[in-house]
Structure formats: C-alpha cells, structure tokens
Length: 438
Ligand code: UGA
Image 1 (tube, rainbow, N blue to C red):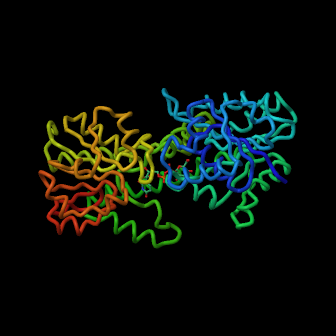
Image 2 (image 1 turned 90 degrees about the horizontal axis):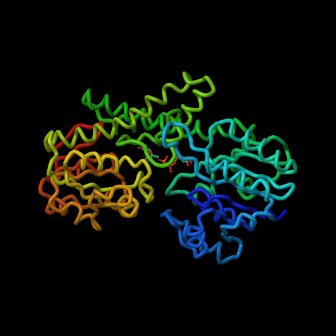
Image 3 (image 1 turned 120 degrees about the horizontal axis):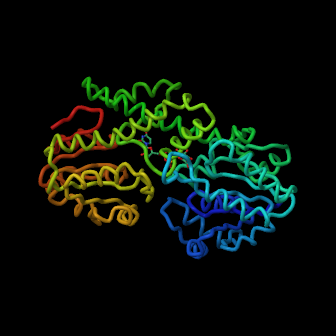
C-alpha cells in the first residue's frame, strides 16, 4: 500500500519526522503556519542545527517525495497526518500549553479525507488524545485518531527516528494499528519492538520515560552533593554502580544537570496533570528532581565564588558552551546559559563561546559577550567554566590555553575533561562531585 502522509508542524520533531518518513519511500507534505519557515525548508535549509538532517532534507526534496506548504488544504489527499506541533510550558504555570495542538486539530479536522488517520506525536498531558479524538470525530465521524509518542534525542534525531529502540502506538482499534504498521514497516522488518497501547497509556509512556531519565540525572547529581560533603568522587561512583546492568551506566553523568525543551517542561507538566487527576502525591518526588537539578547551577556559582571572591564584580569569566547539550544549537532552558546569566548578574564580565549556539544565545541573552573562537573567549580570563561538553572542548590543549588566561582555573561543569592533563599543565581544576585539585 502506498500511503500519502502529511506532517503538521515543522519544528524540530516535524522536520525530522517528515524527512525520515520520506526517506522510507512515502510521499510526504510538511505543513506549518509560518510561511518563512516553509520557504526556508523548501529550499533545503534548516532553521536549526541537527547533525545529518540538512543533508537528508535536501536529498528527500530532490527525490520529489518531500514537499512543504503553508496551505493546509494540501493535506486533503493524505492518508495519515502526523501532528508534530510544540507543547511548551505555560507562561504562568507548570502545565503544558496546548494552544498549538488544539489549533492544529481544529485546522485539520474539516480538511482531512474520510478514512484517514490523524496520529499525534507531540508530548501531551494524559487525556488529551481521547479529547482530541472526540473533537475530531464530532467534525468527521469517518476519520480516526491514534497517538504515537516520539523518543528522539536532539543531536541524534535522524538516527533515533530511522532506528528507534521501540515504537509505541496508542490506538482504539485494529485498523489504526494496521495503518501505522504500514508506515513503520521498515522498522518492523528490522525487528524494532512494537508496543500497542490504549490512548492514555501511550501518552503516559512518553512522560514516564522522560521523568525516569530526569530522575537518573538528578540522582547522580544528588550523589555528587554527597561526594562533595564526604570527600568522594562521583565519577568513580557512577562508573562503579553503572556496571550493575539493573542500573546501567548511561545518563549518570554528574554535572550542571538537565535542560532543553523537553525534560524540564515535561516533568513539570506531568506534576501539574497528576494534580488535576488527584494523584499529585505519586509525583511529589519530581519536585525534588527539579530542585536538585536547579541546585547544581547554584553549586557551580558557589565554586566560582570560592576561587575568585564573594564579590564577582569586574571578574572576567570565560564560558565554554551555551547549548543545553553538545551537537545542538538549542538554548532552551540551557543550564550553561542560565549559569552565565547568573554570574553576569553578579557583576562578572562574561565571555561565551559555543560552536553552534551563539546566535540563539545572543538573541536570548544580548547582555553577555560572545567570542568567535575559544582563544578569544579565554583571553585574560580569571576563570573558565566548561558548561557544554562539545568534543572540540575535550580536545583543547591545556598547556597552550594556560598562556592565554590571567589565572589558570578551570571548573568543569560536565565532568567531561581529562582532569589529569589539566592539573599536570598547572591548572587549578574544580568539578561538581569531585575534590578540587591544583
Ligand atoms: C530528551 C530524551 O532523552 C528523549 O528521549 C526525548 O525524546 C526528548 O527529550 C523529547 O522529549 O523530545 P533531549 O532533550 O534531546 O532528549 O536531551 P537529552 O539527551 O535527554 O539530555 C537532556 C539534558 O540532560 C541535557 O541538558 C544533558 O546535558 C543532560 N544530561 C544528560 C546530564 O546532565 N547528564 C546525563 O548523564 C545525561
């Protein structure tokens, strides 16, 4: 069966999904309300940085399988419609803002053809899918709605979409599942685990997974606090507990914690939804996960003060990294930028460098200074903060860098640098959850 597919919302998730599904051989149209974004994508240009994606976008455009349009009527011939719009945190609360999901559903409901399937991929509060399905069916009873959460990571978006570690489909009947099995036939042939669930469970899988990941990170950051108090080393501790396969060694990298457009807002929206459901006690622990995470940023600033002085006025601080994680230009809720802004607010002169996220960072925090090279960033610095673990920072020669700074003090906020080589080069080396050396 050759299916025609539409993807509504061409942000991070939507563009990746559209290009990947086109590469599986389907005819795909990507739709967005932003005509500028559509024009850019139609020329094969990505409005953000993601490894491998621009190349894939260009080859799928060239194949003729992928097109983009700001005209919603272009979806009328599609058999499957993926809803990929954003669900940010509400401005005045913890809950998710469903404005885009609601308006996308309202826009497509009168246009979708009989027999077609709408498939939600956005991260939504549990209960949303059932409500949207009822709304859709009240406009056209001959269409259906399923939910298919997305687990892709920024920096690995193409890899995660083409080779997911599981596919979860929330459906109310066999026909919807059968259609999704056609869409994902290549993955199924490759043996990707397929989990059929009801609508609420499929929504919960996503937020449960992100809550677990956030918990793992905050757990190791709590251990880092204990290590600091007791004179232990959290990197050794993480390695040791990670050998137990029940624990696993991934997502145990202690440091300044999690940020980005997903983990922080998802755990908050989950707490807000649990409260609405009268089950808030079950997720009380997520409050601690959130505060351990934010505390890591404050602890980092304490380390700065310990080496420089309580008063940071006029101190020159070089910051390596602005993105919320490497291989991304995303600065949403970035711990690196938050720390930079806080030391700046405390009077320091802050110079920031990032291989990809400078433009986004400068837009969000215009008061910080931005350097176009690592050398320019650290020149004359009283202290360096390593806040996003880009590969290029791990390759820095500490001997050469020492000649450029005013004082050789490195604080590794990601526990990612080779401490020995920095100490051997004469640096004072500090990190969260480990003893200070030098
Ligand atoms: C996260 C999930 O990992 C994806 O599975 C999910 O699909 C996605 O959210 C989403 O909901 O769309 P992502 O936001 O790309 O993906 O980032 P992660 O790789 O999860 O990293 C999140 C943050 O945790 C980063 O700031 C990272 O630096 C930090 N982190 C990660 C740590 O501090 N320690 C670790 O050990 C791992």
